[in-house]
Length: 513
Image (cartoon, rainbow, N blue to C red; front, side, top):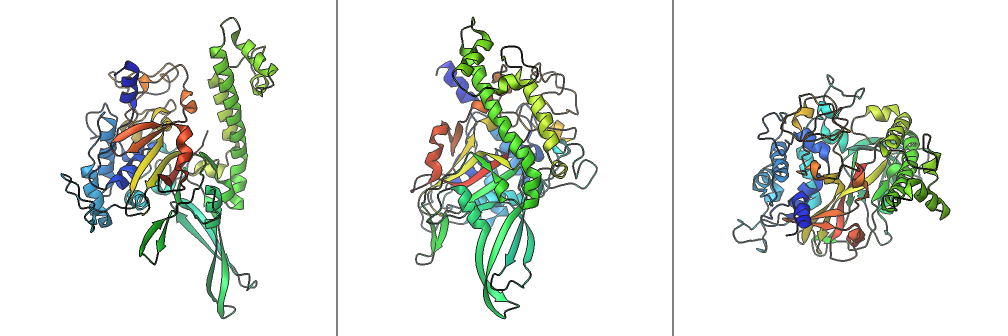
């Protein structure tokens, strides 16, 4: 194997062995790796740690096996056997211990006979099983509601659950007061019918429905319209593509094959109540403008890097302007050198962060785990291949930047010691391990560095550009124990339209500062 191929193989995350129709569980576990804050909350130790004795005491039956499984995934270059986690999952949720009555699930040497299960149900049940895990102090920024010393918050409730306002009214009885309810939700659904071509339209369809019920004022059955709008957006947004419908004639769930396009960047502001929209819009709109400016700067820097040395950066910027390309932001920013040369990227980022922080609504800033912008990027997908829910094959796709990008910001607190994570803004609560790898010059003065729980050695990553991961739009494909790179150009093949792999569960992460 060539050196480059070997390096790529070593930095690639590992897969999970299929123990007999367990692809539904494997895809769930891999997709949830796209939530590094969950690993912090679980106390996943760093790969170079010899034990997890310092990990937080977490309650519940499933959290500890899940923590151990993630720890194992980060410490090896071989596929991991998830038998211990699977056994506990079946104890907690007996539905996953159902036997395959057709006999097709039997696999030699695997103790087979277990039936295929629905990955979306497994995904939801795993999240429900870890709902008692608390938000560690290290993830709570100063001034937040539920900070250190206060009442502890639950991780799932804060980071993965939103709130929705449902209003039920009848056009047949305008004098009847609308019924309003507030619910907590862990996912939003995308209904798929013969007119659904895009995820957003399917979601909007699910937020408005018509039902029949007895009207107390009319004394008869009447049509009611239920309109739902989100009043709290979490940091992680789960979208369920409702691809299975019950067929009464065959007494089973059948797959809806229709092709439905999903975005890699999603603006969820349209789903919110007027009150929440007003809070989100200032930071949301400015962040979109900043992302365009960053993209232009990256283009200029790439041209500068590839240009002949004699030309210099100013020449490249001038050439771009002559060609009519929009790079005016390079010279409009204060502090730029004469000729339009760009400042160091860190200067721009610090300036942008200060600007965005001033635009974030105070209520949203104080709400731990809430989205402050309403803008999301797609980080994980669970797909289904086949024609029925109780058969076929599930796989997970996780964006590469999840494993190679910066870990979550940690604040001073117990989990800053225990969690296997690193961040230049983290406030470590212990003395750096003299045997641990050194932080780069930019971060050595602010925090100690610990290897992230993903098992990726950050020292192998290029240190010249700390934002290089933003250009990597490729994905990892997790097909049980087989892990491969999935080019971004092929992502549209997961839209559906047949029995091949179709997006079933999508995990979006809120874009923050």
